[in-house]
Image (cartoon, rainbow, N blue to C red):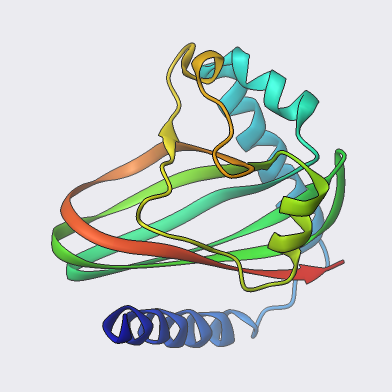
Length: 181
């Protein structure tokens, strides 16, 4: 577990350094662009599998990460930013940090949506220390897959590959933060 914590800290340091270098250019339209990226991402997911609509209709809340980047050479890490919705209304921002260790090499970009079945699960996520272990299973979106998928411990996770290739046999997890709007 100490190794996983060290990996999370290393990935966090990289994310902070990357974030600080991007602060140089302030963009007043950033929030609007992020909202547009989320809309495009949701459209991509629904085009790939229209049965996902039931999750958007029935979930108490969800978080959409339009772009999650992941890379590894034995030790791996990933990072992405997203928007959190409660009953269809944008309420804040989230970050995802991934860490893993094992046989792995490559780089990959993907989108991820996490649906929260009820208020309790979303509130737990909003506390800012939410983690998904290696046992939590994300479902890669293909036509019809959502029709046969349900919540596990109050969450349903779907991913959609964008670019890259990753070969891995590793153990890791995802850690999330939340910032109220």
